[in-house]
Length: 225
Length: 239
Image (cartoon, rainbow over all chains, first blue to last red; front, top):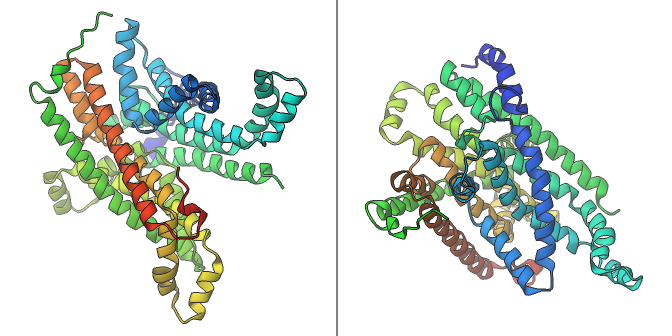
């Protein structure tokens, strides 16, 4: 039932090509997950600040953005990018760019909510004190609010990274060679579904579980005493 | 832009039929998986708060293992890896009765069950321990205390996060297309394949998901107000 030999034989392909993303194919779970969270967070900051903006022409679109992407499955967003990007840009788009843009756009909605909650957790008096000292609105955001908000956001950010990390497996449906796709490819040749899928389940589990333990310890350490 | 819009592809030919059948499969899959998930979630969530260690450890293992692995991997696991382990008559029966659908129900139900479990556990832990102690002191067994005192309160407390999880379940059902369950996203792609009108097909699918999610969350908001426990702050808080 459990065939360890098949895993051992294909370990380099699964881990180096599938998990890390170095090899003959465009792929890699980590290679997709890390830029996705970084870029998604940058976009998420704008969306989170936008949702709190007093001007209606900023906060209404930001709210629609968040509500829209939270009501749509990620698979749908990936297909949107896959079919629409080549039409709009009028050129073939590599899978990596498609997957990356889908994840960035989708995750930015969730990260925007985290940013918003983080900003709202900063006491109002901080903003007032900074304004009273003569800082401009954007200076208050950059030097006073965001640094404190960021600290409060860290545990939720790690949690969101875990979600994103698991979601990158969906990039395999457009042919991106991540860990899941690598297992699929190996399984097509070896036909050992139980061993292979259980193995990648364990790989995913080790990564996500250790990150969630880390998030929990961060939460304890960073929570105000 | 060179792209020519042609919205009539959505009602010409079999498209409308495909969309409706896809919607029906999505709802059926989500409903069955939801029942499985809630049952698993209640049992494992409650068990994680009892004092008996082996039971608690088993429930913790279930939650931590199934929650932390991507749903897609579980789809493949239930679809490709589990059936060969079953006895031959069962296999034959499943192959004749849409194996992919039941694999998707299991994958989605067991995965979401682990997530529901966490929601319920936090609900139970927000109830003061004295409630449990008082009910045991009044002569209830542990099971009765959970059945009549703890769970009725906890289930009402967790409606907002449970709604979120239910919406996640509905959206996650789209992952079933990877094991060729003919649900909504699958049918959306099929329309795209037949008509080469990606924009129209995806718009239709996306709108259906948006309507489903919005109406479900409105409905749960109503349930939340109906079942709110008077006097608690959570009674009036909305997401």
